[in-house]
Image (cartoon, rainbow, N blue to C red):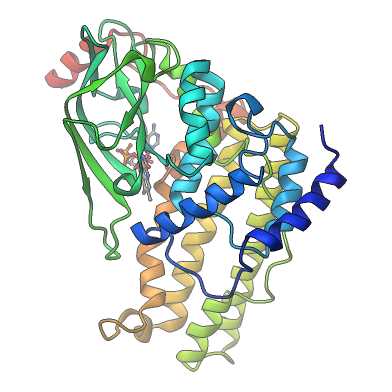
Length: 404
Ligand SMILES: Cc1cc2nc3c(=O)[nH]c(=O)nc-3n(C[C@H](O)[C@H](O)[C@H](O)COP(=O)(O)OP(=O)(O)OC[C@H]3O[C@@H](n4cnc5c(N)ncnc54)[C@H](O)[C@@H]3O)c2cc1C
């Protein structure tokens, strides 16, 4: 295997010859144009041998270590690399790493090279109208057919499904066993016959997530991820990745944060309150929180590299980010006062917009309450939450629920 130093030298030569330098402008990664442009950048990275650094070589990756991935992050920081926004997280951060642990070699040989070439982006078909925190309660069903399976049901809150190529989909294959024991995962193309993907307009005006309706969607058995009815073990792997642990190359020594949070400074300046001692305290607190969350994430990245981060540990990072985001958004409104919540259409409103968006990290990938449950049970060893439905066949759970 190439040494880390030689790899650093290779990256240092390759990067300026093949990628643009990063400017100060930030583009919205969640548009069709941006995604198309960045698929081409992903292809360039693949052709240069800089895609899937820690993924197995037999599937197009480079089979290197987390240390190599970290070094590449450092070297590439000043260049425009492929950025699909949330789809980068779902594809490269959670779906494919989970597949690598659970899917068949044939499945991986078919999909992973396409992902690395920027030809396949994956979204997550997990949540349903009646199953979010209780993910094991999904009711989308897969039934056997001569050709494979047919899927019927509904999914919701699937981030960027309208820009993705495939969805990683959790369904029920057995209704006569307890809920965790009758689940199976499949890969489903977002343009499959019978699948309707509909973007949902959010309170902040954007449409990042979608709802899906599955009406006799045909799926070959070759697109199954993991064993039939054993989907919960796949889910357990996935949730650790989704909560931000186990990602090779994650930053372990974050940069020092900028001296003060620039957006809050702008709100304070615009409302003439930069000299207000209470406002200065709020801005300093927000600065400290950014610093603490970055250090926390770095510590989790180190624990992941050492194989010591499970879903309980990952919960700290999620919880930290959720708390800091909400506090910062609240600070923006409090500092700006009336001027932060009223604005001309098309101008300003950044503080109010941040406030509307600030709930996302407290819900996405498992709510704050579920993270606290995880820490209580997995880390602190407190008694498990009482559950009345885990030992009953799922059909019986549904029957009793109808009678409550
Ligand atoms: C920005 C964003 C992106 C998302 N992206 C995706 C995606 O790509 N794919 C996908 O499948 N889903 C996605 N989701 C959905 C997300 O995973 C769910 O919203 C989340 O798991 C909560 O489920 P729910 O909305 O059904 O709420 P519920 O589970 O109905 O919870 C409602 C409230 O009850 C509380 N609660 C529930 N159970 C317990 C308990 N046992 N103990 C204590 N409190 C409890 C919750 O904390 C919450 O406050 C996304 C959500 C957001 C906000």
